[in-house]
Image (cartoon, rainbow, N blue to C red; front, side, top):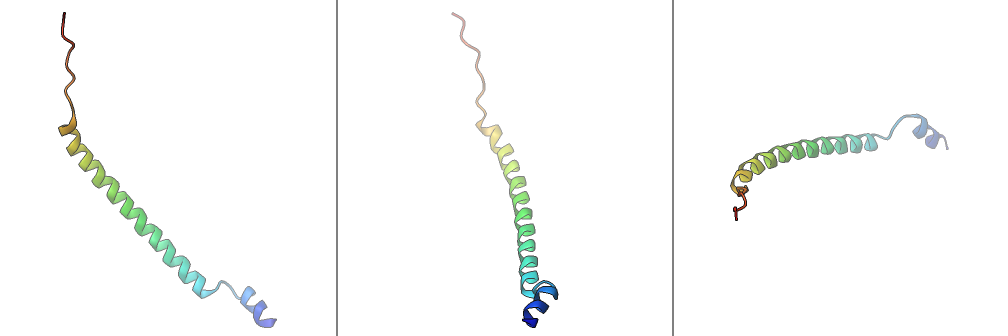
Length: 62
């Protein structure tokens, strides 16, 4: 029982702290990749947008 109390009072489990740091780093990496992909998508959309624009024609007078 003393070991259980010591583990509880002694602070967080080092394995849990290590896993938490690993997951936080993974989240930062994924957020950075998401930002990079958004920027790349914006550039590509701007390039393609000009090619796909259909000119608006005036209606014919009758």
